[in-house]
Image 1 (cartoon, rainbow, N blue to C red):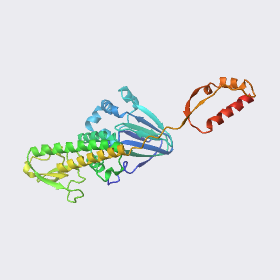
Image 2 (cartoon, helix red, strand yellow; image 1 turned 45 degrees about the vertical axis):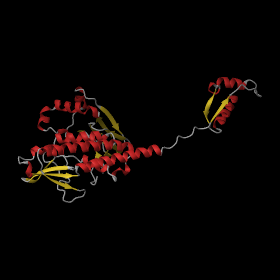
Image 3 (cartoon, rainbow, N blue to C red; image 1 turned 135 degrees about the vertical axis):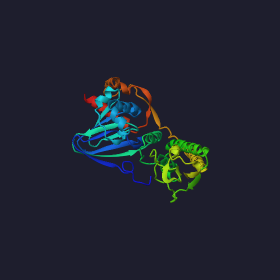
Image 4 (cartoon, rainbow, N blue to C red; image 1 turned 120 degrees about the horizontal axis):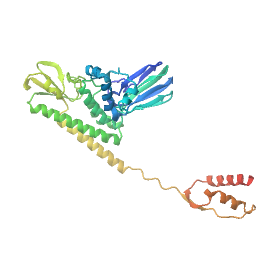
Length: 355
């Protein structure tokens, strides 16, 4: 991403005092987060598993129905603090952790969490993403549209840039597999939306290339759902500065199709080329892995040994010693360890004689 996004590209530094708290929330775009406690008093965390997020939200609405009717997006405001006891009574699983200086706390995608400080302290936190986050990221964007919440970054832009020749340089093959699946879904969703628009008529179409300064919808948001516009946007002559995403074309205005303009970044053919090129790259990467696989390490040399009954100056003492040391009375195989085993055996034998 080009921008230094606070909390994602640039970590946050938190200073707490006694009973200062962070309200119930999950991370932007359902991302992972990691928090390191630098110094000071402990922090107490309460967490809800990501797969129980719906149960948590339903419990919150049941506890404060009137408030949520007035403010449907209340959980996005970081303004709600409810005792875990009430949530447990509603059947929500709650987990608690005490974070001490020098310890990390990691939250998983969609996991709601809250907490408070026991005194003055300093914590540093940042979001991050792994391959399994891509599905959560897609779901978070759909949810943002439902609540008309402005996203922190464009999910489409992230997927296309990470799968580009420049972006894939630092991505592993395993991650790129997941990325390719998300790229295909992004392509399919966008193409289907464009077909629906064109099926209702043929508006004026404007194409934009990468870094085209005339791109009027770059970094703009849909006036209806606040989603970030990246691959396409729709305008009308009656209000040229009002942009909407293709899903809300019907809510743009009442004008005819002839008065509208469809703004596109990348044609459908170019999107197909991106997918095909990424698929070819993945195939080549897998083939290279197979071809350049490091051969298995040859087996270590092994030695066979047998401890037998021996007579020496001490007479039967050694026989009695070997009888008691059951772990030494066997015939088998063990890795070659140089002189380590004889030294241990001799040391044990000397100690036995002293006794």
